[in-house]
Length: 319
Image (cartoon, rainbow, N blue to C red):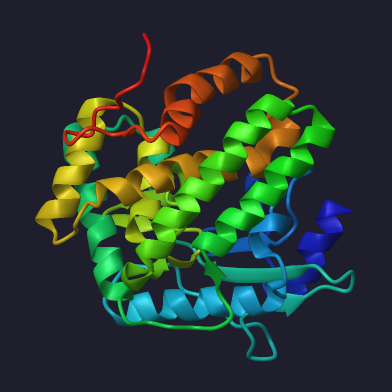
């Protein structure tokens, strides 16, 4: 069935390439098609739950807005994957079963999750993020996901629903309080909201001959710039790495708001739990890791304590 999807999708672009390689499957099925194209079939892997992210919004409209945002960044001089139009001059294709497909030109590079991240690369990550935020300022598109108080409410409802899947009522209550606290902080900082990437992990940054390139804008939206930095800090661990990213971000014109960073860091953790819980809860590592998150991040946050020190040290990490 998967092969039929690929053949039907590529037929809309008159692409006939024998070599097709599955790169990953999370929110999308992503394939390398020969040496020229990247194919994304917007079909999430089983257990990957993102409905709470896009509550009340048509996905097709989100895909259109995502392409418009990327086109804006490219026009502003950023290196971005370029969308490919189908035979009807459209950048989004709908398959017979209702699944949506997009194709872009292949961008040669290696994702950072496959590389050893030294100080220089971490500094460049910070620079790239500041550049993205600067070039995104002032751009508006609709409809779009918003990472503000309303999103915190959606995440809170998702956490409540996870009690039916085994999440303890005690942990759920702490997580819901975190959503309330983060929502209040983000509401006060609404004037600083702008377009952000929303999912800037190491796997969504390519190292290319021309520098670092952000990819996969599936979770882009309106939010505080600290949300992107929080995703990076949660995905790329270690004090020195965080400090290097922060230094690159500041040197390139970015500003770090620690109160908002703390709120966003906790929120990104809860967002990941909301998305991945069905998969993660079946893994042996999950229960002890969840307890650590509770002790080191969630409980201190609802008690009004800071998560990050001024030097980006995580204050409550044990061991």
